[in-house]
Length: 244
Ligand SMILES: O=C(O)[C@@H](CO)OP(=O)(O)O
Picture: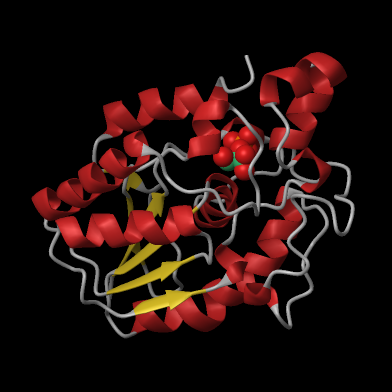
């Protein structure tokens, strides 16, 4: 039995365009991002990859991307499940800071360690500061992180993959997961068996559906495929160059 999984990073947000670290700050899509969401939905429709259920984070940019993409491929009616476990990586004290200015201030190496290393978290955010989410009602009962590295994201995302996404796959549903650059890097690392070192080079483009066929063990026999590989490669390159 082959299961079908589609991963979709949200479209460009207002802070992506302003080049600010975002993390758990609930920033909306901008017009470019809305167009990307619609284009993503069109790609799904054209490829005949029609989701039966969607899982999103609890952040607006992922929720709106899913809504717009599903509306475009006439799948606005499918069941929706949401979890904070699919949220973007918490960027700690870097949330709200300019990426280029941060790179200049701390240097290339530190900047890249914070941005792409497997296990070096940014400095923790101060509780009660402007971009701290600890008082947000949507996280009632959740221990809101003060910072996260990719390893931390894997640790909080994998239980949801197993308890909530795998059962939908096992029921034969085409599952769409609409999430974020770093929460999807965590899932792709697992699926494509990418090493802790090599994951630093992986960037997920905005608004580009990435399709996996999974076996009975919920693992793919080959890496996921973007519906538009050329456009996805160009968009991933743009993500890699943020802060330059
Ligand atoms: O700012 C962020 O939250 C993420 C995704 O937009 O950025 P980066 O690609 O630098 O990890």
